[in-house]
Image 1 (tube, rainbow, N blue to C red):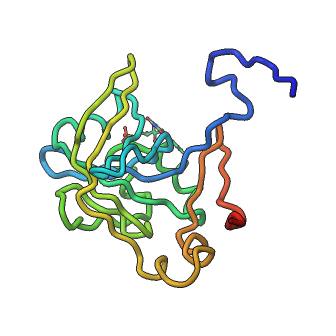
Image 2: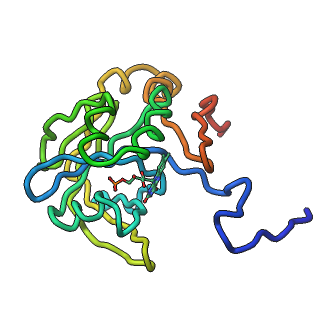
Length: 185
Ligand SMILES: Cc1cc2nc3c(=O)[nH]c(=O)nc-3n(C[C@H](O)[C@H](O)[C@H](O)COP(=O)(O)O)c2cc1C
């Protein structure tokens, strides 16, 4: 199969080769003031921990808060709320939370808040940070994993259908999961 080379500038990759699940990362600052920001460069890292990680710019409030408090929550965004991610990232500070229509509630094992409208949450404590210039990859240890019980009922098709994860592709582009299938073994 013939392949064409793309430039090594990631902004020039169309299509982007790695879709990233859109999550809302919620944090708080040293005074307890909450912040929520969409992130999509997010991944599981290790079963043991478990460890998760996400990419962030060093100028972002999220990074400052994680450094200050050592905690964050990864809130899974459902496809029905995908457009909300873009609306959120265009607003900052007080205005973002006020106009987001999202509800900040207490988490179970960390002081960082949860986003009520999201169906699942990974409460994390900071494990490590890897710096790449202005960008960082933030590793967290999951200390609590919570999910809407409706997402745990029925077949995998039912469960993923209710969780309805959504993926960032590029620019203002996203996609849902599509059909859930099982390999024939
Ligand atoms: C769908 C979507 C995905 C995003 N993914 C990331 C990401 O993975 N890493 C990142 O640093 N910013 C990402 N952003 C941009 C941040 O959300 C945006 O810069 C935000 O203003 C940062 O907020 P904060 O300063 O409160 O952390 C994304 C934005 C959108 C809309």
